[in-house]
Image (cartoon, rainbow, N blue to C red; front, side):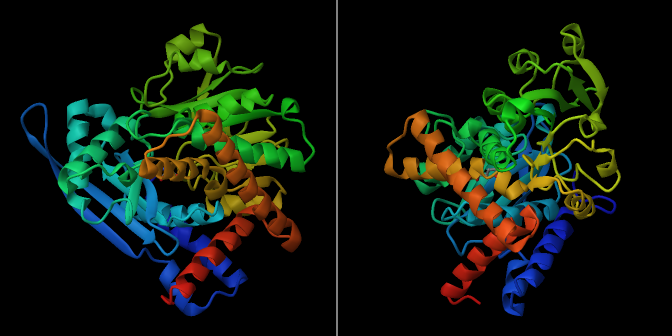
Length: 429
Ligand code: GLU
């Protein structure tokens, strides 16, 4: 995943930005300002471990841009986290909030740790330590964290509690992705995956393809993937394969059933990190294939919903000729080289910061509900989410059509223009 070898997520995020800056002829000042985060925090989190020793974890929070509103973005717990990955992700959050037109900026956080090997008490200590280091620099009017890779509503609740302890009062708008009943919003858990499918549904409509005539292969089986599959099946689609990380074997596997996977069945044999039990899956009739087999399935739709750097120059050629749509559930799954090949093949791309914007959009709804202490019903949340996601998709797709440009480029044009305009209006640049 992270910045290793030739792959660096920050280089990729900047390369994407630079190429659009050329397309829209962005002035030098705006370029210099927007291609670098406004602020970043690097800190250590000492934790007394269960065995009595002290372990020191490295943490980061990057605030890319807050011209349109407080910074917003998740916190990842991952053993290979790097500052450059967090920088890239914070930049993508700025574009994500702008493309769905919510009044928030972009931020991201990370801690280098592996929750697989940490007790709940140790994880709680990391969450509280993270907030103690940042309590003066985040909050409802500055920067609002949320869950991401390997962080959960329980982690968010510990973080909110620590923030409130330090500031003395209730500040539920300081963090989103909290448990329902503790300041969380109904629908937040579903929101990212469902949002991917709202945009996919619109793309299918545009291409005059019936969802029930399509089959998909999904990379990942975490929160985003599971809810994307749930809604995709509800609108009539069939998923034939999913992949997930096997912690014991330290590799990814693909689980395939050619007549369609049964989501409930797989969820029943999955741990809380999205790891599927291999033996049980075989008993249920699933084929177990190598982790990269998700990409070469004979399907209409690919939904990469794991980590960045998944569709690369090396594996993009393995993609079946049948693939018509890629909906990026993950952040940064496609490298620029692979993206060129996908564009050249005429595949309809729903780019990450548009496709997966449902999570942060629902986080925004959660903040609104938290701030007024009045919580909406599920239908209201999902209805509003659908409206926002559909409007964003249509705006990007119309621009792509009008200017004959790639969907990812159109999404960037919309977002960068909105953010640059906010910076100019404030007199920053
Ligand atoms: N971590 C999610 C993302 O990458 C959600 C961020 C949020 O809710 O603030 O979009």
